Amino acid sequence: MRSEAEVNRAVYLYADTVRRICMVYLKNYADTEDIFQTVFMKYLLSSAVFENDEHEKAWFIRVTINACKDLLKDFFRKNTVPLDEIIPISTEMSEDNREVLEAVLKLPAKYKEVVYLHYYEGYSCVEIGKMLNKNVNTIYTLLNRAREMLREKLGGEDIG
Amino acid sequence: MDNRIRNAFNSVHAEDELKNNTKEFLAEYAVKANKTSAQRFKRTVVAFAACFILTLLGIGGWRFYTIPVSAISVDVNPSIELGINRFDRVVTVDTYNKEGELLVKSVRLKNLNYSNAIETLLNSEAMKPYVSTDDNLVSITVIGDTKQKSEEMQNKIRSRKYGESTNIECHASNREQTKAAHDAGLSFGKYRAYLELKALDPEIKPDEIKNLSMRQIRDQISALKNNCDPTSDENCCGALEEPTAKQHHGKHSSHS
Image 1 (cartoon, rainbow over the protein chains, first blue to last red):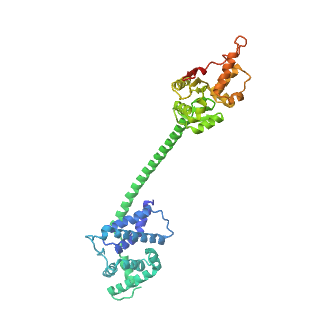
Image 2 (cartoon, rainbow over the protein chains, first blue to last red):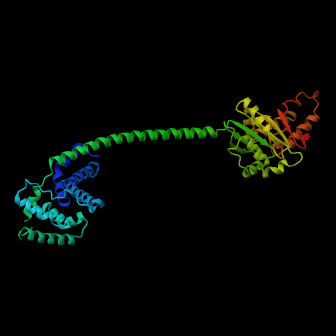
């Protein structure tokens, strides 16, 4: 089991990353809290040794994605809609950021996860394929379609 | 556009409340887990200690059970020695001639109470050829861990009937004779009879009586006693006491 100092350092470094992934996958704050506890608990109990910061960050991203997917697989959640279901975007955000985020978060799940991993985290299609256990060509296709959808929503500008 | 997406996600941060709640939850969990693991460690240590003590008790108990403290020699022609533990159970079976060896192969005597073991032995099919003759003679010699125990064992053995074994002598012997008997290759029961015979015939050697039945040895003793004139030879007769007791029952008690 890791020390309290190690856990606090991890929370300091990766809380934002976990929060962003939760925003991509989940629709309410209570679930985000659950995922935070699950992910950092796994870190607390994990004996994994990381080669570098990138490796550690990739571990957090993968564990958070898996935790979110597991939560969504839950039968009760699949068949019910929470009362507080909203897209949790802060009101303090600038208009442009809010518009872009809303556009991304309104995409179907399979598109928004690749958009996040590619455009924000900077992973290549090959890396995303490995991370999500999907064929690289599928990732290319998903990314192209997502790009098309975003272009339509956000006004036809070129995307990376 | 990729910059816009990057900027948009960049503006998302984990709320302080979320971070603090998570830290608190994990700190509490760690305290509980440490307590639990300390308790588990304690429990494991106690369990191991208990296992160790139980194992020691088991081994000790087993050794206590398997160590013979008394012995019984049953001699007809087959010569068998039974080692008896503190609980009056047979824990060792040794044989001192081929007939004895063959006999114990066909009967299970271990863990039986000694009087049951003698009964089983004398009533066994393999023993029948030796005890069903008219002049059969069964010699049972006991060595108890105390004199009192020897007497108790003799009384218990005498109080039972043993099927076709009609002539049964029951004696007590002592531990000092046991080593000499085993060195001579005889059971201590037969060795006792040998000493009786030797008192009347000093030239006799253990090998000469080794393959004789108890009836034959007893007959030799009787013959020598009958030929003996106590006035001419002081060493003749009475050098050894008569058997401490004899049990005669059945049709040919006159033989013993």
